[in-house]
Image 1 (cartoon, rainbow, N blue to C red):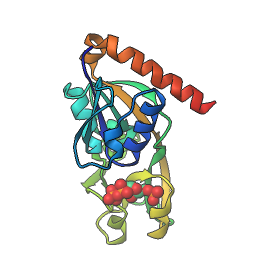
Image 2 (cartoon, helix red, strand yellow):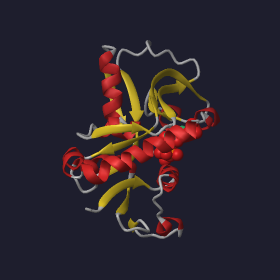
Image 3 (tube, rainbow, N blue to C red):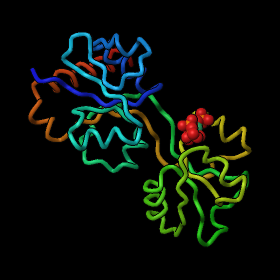
Image 4 (tube, protein in one colour):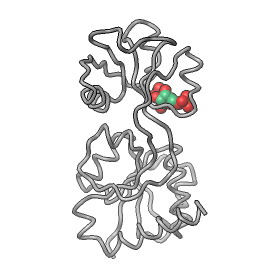
Length: 212
Ligand code: PRP
């Protein structure tokens, strides 16, 4: 059997993914040892995880450097990757939203300026509404932008809403719901179907049992 490579994002998504694999009978003891290694084998050595930045999961999977990947729908939409999305894993749930200062009227500006880590998703969303906008690409702490006059509003993910609240911002418009997705390289899905299909099936069964 050929080895199966799986791209994960360090942090909570990887922790939850490792748990799902464990429930599906695949252990990654090396991951639990809090190591700095970026390539970690499963105990049975049939699988290997690689730890990458969230936005890069799609890139590794699209190019076949990983057969499978687990990433948030936010990063998959932004990366616009040419991969198959197989399963909604149901964790990592949050939402895309337009946010700004309390009471800000989205229709007041002729050309809205929007700060975001997600310029592609932002452009798509406003284009569909026929709105002309200027996107300002940031890499983090996006909530600062409307507070210091860098932009009118932001497009970002909102999970608990705490970051918005503590910075005096409100959701002005809900966009799309987000959760973690299992994606697969299109070629691997055919050439490694013997290895991948049973694994995907096990993951689906694990989710059904968890959801009760
Ligand atoms: C994300 C996101 C929001 C925050 C939302 O930022 O960009 O800022 O989490 O979570 P909340 O609704 O639970 O407060 P992240 O923690 O990735 O940090 P960043 O701002 O540096 O990107």
